[in-house]
Image 1: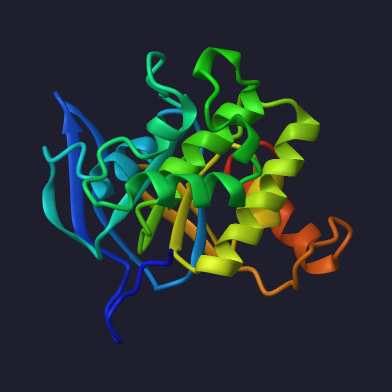
Image 2: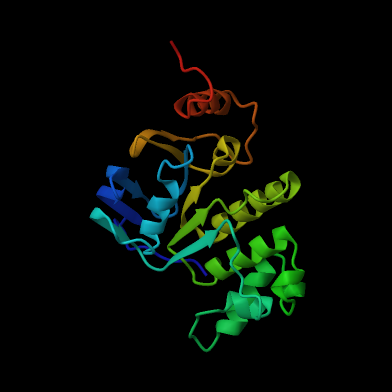
Length: 241
C-alpha cells in the first residue's frame, strides 16, 4: 500500500511560503523540498510555525502566499487520533474511502499495525497507544506518497512511545512514503529521521542530514554532537562560542 512519486518529482516542494495571522508573521519566504521516501523531522519552539506548515501541506490551510505542491495522495495523523466515536475501529480506518475493497484494505492495515483483534472495538475502549495505531492505520490505508505526522506520540507514555517509534520505522521501511514528522522531542527526531530541520524566526534556521544507521545508539558520536547543536538552535543550551 505504498504511494509512488514519478521519477524526478519531489514528494513536497515549497517556495517562498509566507503565512500571517493578522500582523503576526508565522512563516516568511520559506523554501523546503522533501524527496520521495525521505523521512524528515521538523522541530522548533512552540509557535514557530511547525503545525502551520504541516496544515498547509495537508491542504487544510490555504491562506498563504508563495507556492506549494505535493504528490498525492497525502495523509495526516494528528496528536489527537480524531476517531469517530460512533464507528468501530475498522470503519474508522476505512472512513472516506470509496473503493470496493475499502473494508478489506482497512482490515489489512489494522493487521500491520497490530490491531486486527480490535477491528470491531469502539474507539472509547482503546488505550492511547491503540488509538494512535488506529489513526496511523487510517493514514496508511490511503497509500500516501506523503505522510504528515503532527506530534502523534506526544501524549503517550515513554514505553508506548518507544513502541510506536519502532512501528512507524517498520511501516516506513515497508511502504516508503515520504514522511514529515512535527515534534518537540529532539531525541525522537534523531531516532526516526533522515533529516532534521529547525524552524525559527518564521523560516528554516537549521537543517542537517542524519547518516547514522538504524537502529540508532544515543551514544553515537554523530548523534550526540547533532543533539547538542539542535538544543543550541532551540535555545535550550548555549551554542558554541
